[in-house]
Every structure is written in C-alpha cells, then in structure tokens.
View 1 (spheres, one colour):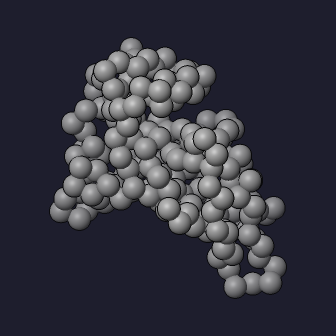
View 2: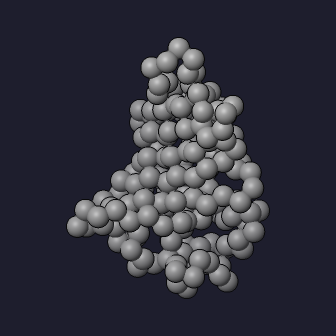
Length: 174
C-alpha cells in the first residue's frame, strides 16, 4: 500500500528553522534504531490522562500497537479513540496523533506479526488477535488485541545540536 504524503509545516517562526523532510521522519517511524520505548497516551472516561508503554510498529502509513484484553488503555479507547503514540529515535522525538481502531483483518495481522517477530516478539495470529508466550507483565495473558492509529498529525522535535532547528509538523488530510 502506498502512503499518502502529508503536508509539511515549519513549527518555528525563524529563518534558520527548516522543516525536516517527511522521508527522514518516515525512516525513523519504519525502522527505529536501538532500544525504543513507545508511549501511548489515552484519556480515561473521567478526563484524566493515561500513559503507558506499548509495543508499537509503523506499517502502511499507520502506527499499530498491542494490548491485553480488558486493559485500562483498551477501555479508554472504547470511550474515546483519540490518542497519541510518542517515542524518541536518532535525534528526534516523534509524536503520532490520531484515531485508534481495533484490527482483526487476518492479512494485516499476519504482516504485523512478521514485523514483531523480526523485532524479537514471537507473535502469531489467532482468531483476530495475537497469541504469544509472553508480553509486558501488566498486559496479562494472550490473546492480545491489535489497534491501528491512523495519523492526523505527526510532530518531530529535534533533540540534538544537529536536529534542534528542525521542529516539524506533518498534517494528514484523510
């Protein structure tokens, strides 16, 4: 599937500040280097924020993550599917804002399982979810539901001397 090219916006009103090309952000999203923790932010029904680490992967223009059934994050998404996934990689903090929806399509789950397996998590597809011998201790036992976050906005904020002048917003008009 081909990804839609987003609109790129410079975030600083400074002649020295240039936006980062989408291709650079996409490379970080598709193939993060080193140990990376993805953080999912959701909103509880009473309006309080909820932030937890998740196993996440970028595929076909969206961010995917897994969760145990009945977890707080899954309950939050049932009430309000708006969320953010954030992580740091190679000189940039990246934040993907969007709408989460449960994925049960076998073909998509198989492709995602391949990606997770390549990263060391032995997930298999079973009955519209993932099965695996382990996950995060707070996730509970399998099966693990999979969610797709369709991005509306992605932010990239530089964190090194070479990248800090390139804060960028990418908007997806879907």
